Image (cartoon, rainbow, N blue to C red; front, side, top):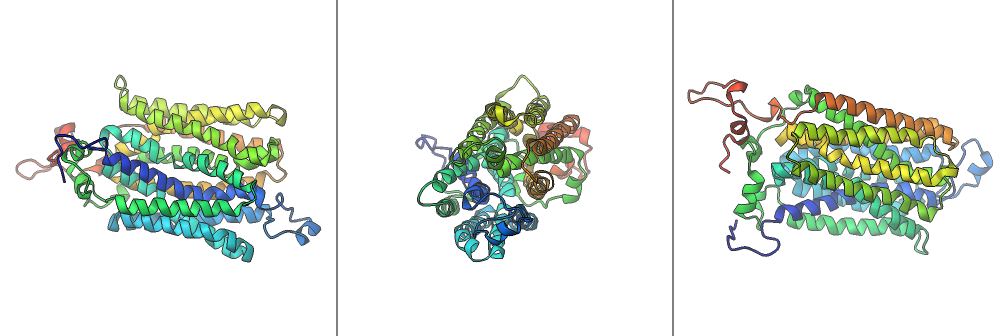
Length: 477
């Protein structure tokens, strides 16, 4: 490690930011590979087949799918993610994120590159590739937690979370326009999969070459930057030797309020990503080439608000952390929930208003980083990776539920059917925020630190431990 007191160029003491941006790109790449299908389905073949139409089924093309088959393709991802989330948590704890996340990226790249081929050969092979895309996606949220825990200072949690958790927006901003252009070009929809696979390989090779599981081991790390990263963290968190107290975490009501808020937000986000193109094309009547941009632009606005809210949450000093989290969470979930309900009543004649409402929803939900995401890291501290990895599990549920909702309700793509779906999502957002506001806190949970002892080896009571001592106990930084 070098001190470089005289300075070291523009990247002096900035290694954590390079890790942040590289990690964000890798996480977004896995998400991009997974969502290409949601767009290419509208240009691979004809519109959704009616299973009851015998003639249409008999004359179907290779890439003409029924609504049930489309749901299976999305459920395959959910199954893969669901089965992989817990094993990845164990692999991360045992081997660290450098090699484990690299392997996840390679699985995603290979399965994505093979989809154009296997989709022509056999539908079961197509499902298998989607399953492997889901397995790699199971690594994303735990990676977010590990990067925040090991590389972010306590003062920068909001900023790190805002960028790392923006993978959904980043992936949509890149994938939807790229897929839309390639689908409309002579290269065809297959090129979208190849472009994403190659980019994924490049990013994850860069990850493996640059990332280190512990900042101390990074060749570019300086004493100055390491002190910033470690400042205020407990000895248990710095040593990274403590086992995750799963039982205690599962009993914590604050953690459950975070997960409930995440459920509402992820349901809404998955709906826009998975069925936004279908809604814009089939219900509002937009052209295929335009739908990619109309989904990507609101996601870009969401990203700006997300990063802005993360920075604002860190910089605002006139309010307590608890008050800031409640304000940001209310803007993100309550406001967007109300507008989601309104969206269900906007008809095709007012399609431009529907786009404006989507823009408002994406803008307000960008504030989630200052809400339940930040609450998760402040409460769980060194165990944030577990709490956030369970948000991955929640995302699996949304991947199951969203196709099921659309399959059961939107059988004819009418506005009345979609209205029911919008109202369900709006109510979930509002309910999640109300419960979060009741339980929100910025205090570290009891499971985040080992009991402090006095000079005689006797355990100190909670009220006898000053806050600063609990956070810095045992740390030399």
